[in-house]
Length: 170
Length: 326
Picture 1 (cartoon, helix red, strand yellow):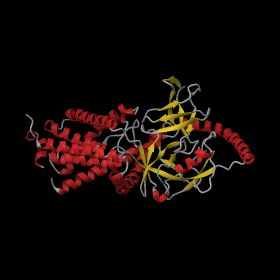
Picture 2 (cartoon, one colour; picture 1 turned 90 degrees about the horizontal axis):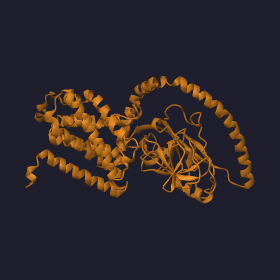
Picture 3 (spheres, chains in turn brown, yellow; picture 1 turned 45 degrees about the vertical axis):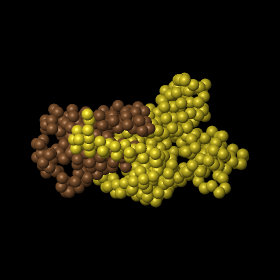
Picture 4 (cartoon, helix red, strand yellow; picture 1 turned 90 degrees about the vertical axis):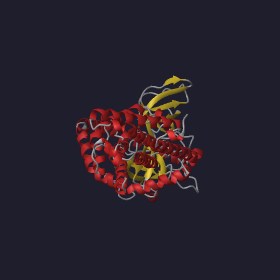
């Protein structure tokens, strides 16, 4: 991966975290917001070489951890798992929304549920939240709605074709 | 038989990163909010604050527009409700004023010191947590403006939370709805005490110690906790309490508008004040901190505060002890 691409990915993750923490502070539908950083990791993991995809997930997660109240490393673990899930399935990805939509929904639900369970194990009482199910389901639905806008940004910003084999030639 | 060579390279890297993550979690939990993790968090927040300020300022007109559109439909009803409230409050203010005069007279008669006045600092919410599971707000005032750890944070309705960490320019507020936070409260109507537990976005849980006292819908719960000045409205009871396993339990909603916080007041108040209060004034039934329901307090503005504005809030039931400054 070129240094230009690495810098670009870092900047996009920073922008995603900034939007997540400021714009979605007030722009909230049913008191929930999309998990934008997770969606960005998912989008770039489709096209980056495997090791860079995993490092993107880990780095974005660590950055989230440093701004969150959860133990340091928890989001890193979750977003690394997101990147790995995408790596395992990306060969089957088609740009057909019929597959991408359920995949985004499943990965977002899985990642947020993993965070909630691990958070509880590590004493954060995340599952004691009466709205835990809503906090998992609504961001997942919003992520599916945002996917057609965010997912195409990854190949466009990296300057590659959207065909699925290009990821390995980056 | 399994061998390391059976694992492909991405899986190996994945396992390595997961192990690093778990080590980080363990080290951070062992440090208990201090150590390298805390330093890194403060550093990241300091570096990231200008970015958050820029995004917050840039997006404000757009967000304001969407909020205005969504508020448009409810304005007529809200206007009618507010007019009715004003009429009721005007009568209440007259009654309160006469009670206040009587209290002053009784205080003078009993030689009790006048209530302390606690400085407040107005601030604006700059950002929220990165995930839906974070119950925190980042405010645009920090230690440079006089904000310190554990200071109580209020809006016009009541208690929002307390300062969890602070940098030079911003501070993080942990909300009272955080499931890890437990607050000792007192029912304003009866004076009975209990504990209030956050449950995230759901109603808070209230457990009363005395099973024989009735707690009814609409009862106001005020602080009776050493970490906060006594008498701040915290929550309103949602349903009559029922007896369960040795406790009287019910649910309550926060008195503050937790989901729509924009401006807040930070009370310049520390635990030292709580100790003084505990020794000298803890046996007295506190009355709520007067929060101006009609708008920002004197010295605050309707627009974003650009400089630190310090106002005062009266905390009844406390006495001044020489040598210990509030």
